[in-house]
Length: 482
Image (cartoon, rainbow, N blue to C red; front, side):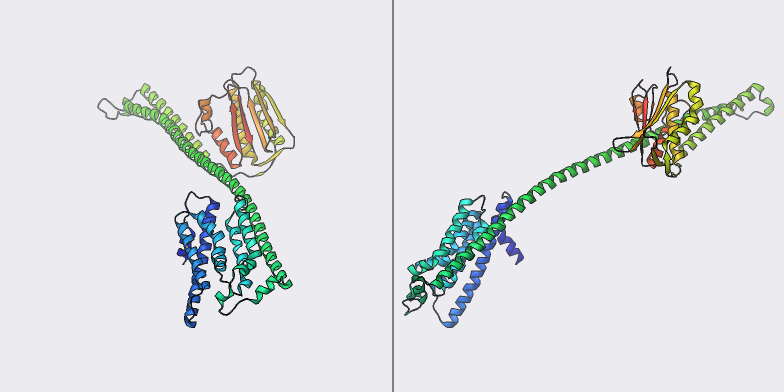
């Protein structure tokens, strides 16, 4: 039954239909189907009853069949895509087929004066449901006016065309005829009540439809806003995916660079060790490759062997130090978070470097605004980061005639505490800047290249960040943001 209802409801619906048209088509089909089933049940009941009582089929039974046929034809019309014709037929023809046609041929039952007006009032709901009061104003008001006039004058139409003898043999008149003709006061109030009911029902439906349209417009507006937001979220998702892919690509690139640097450092240490070991081994052999006896090794060869072993020891120790430095990157202690007043921290740094600044003639300046600024951090680890940055700045200003170093602490526009360490050294070129925080990368001789990488990791452990702004021959500025 559910599948049949779904099939009937969607007769004539196409993908090109708007949401409003689709809803009207479905509702038209459903109303036609309900009327078809109702008339079918009524017709079967009537035929069975008349068969049992051996009565002839009356006009009343025929009009049920005509209405059933009308509903069926409306569904057929809708099936072939003429839903507008099906809709107009449902708006105007049921009252004609069920009420007016039997009346015009003289078939009027006495009880028709009781229920005909209420059938019209019931039918008046159909145009309210199927016709848009704003987009189809003429059709809307014309259909309601037609049904309103039918409600008012249906009794007069029945009096004019009704022939009692056609319904009940021997009858020449109905009592209700005389009461209506004589404008009986009771009947007048009865008619006023019918008109009031018509107006009340249709006014309420009209008001509810206006509210519905208003809510639909608001819903459509909200849906449009949600569509825009959904589109923005999709774009953000795509951007996040892109950034994620970019981060993965950079991570892979970083690991490749790291492996390259480690491999390069190990090979650079291993090659001379291997070469010296081979040369030392040859010094202890004769031309046939046999090991020389101690007495046959000269003093000069002994000194050369000793010198080679010293070099091997030095390179091996350098390799060990390199491995230890590598381990230190993965062994940063967990931060011991506490309140650090930056004024006191910079005083410690100043005392630590005071002699060094004086020795190389560095003009050092520090500024904290306001003076009571503090951060929640590990004192020793943050101090180590600042020392690394100051040490790098001093090395960058090694050949500057008037070296200047400044440390400024303040709050940025976002309310975060930031420490800016600036120098007027040689600056950093773009190629170096791209790899500056990469582990083991350094442009200096005798440097492990882990200072800045270690500093960055320490800042990340504090959920903070470190940035660098520089230009060639314009100095460098490192910014620590907490």
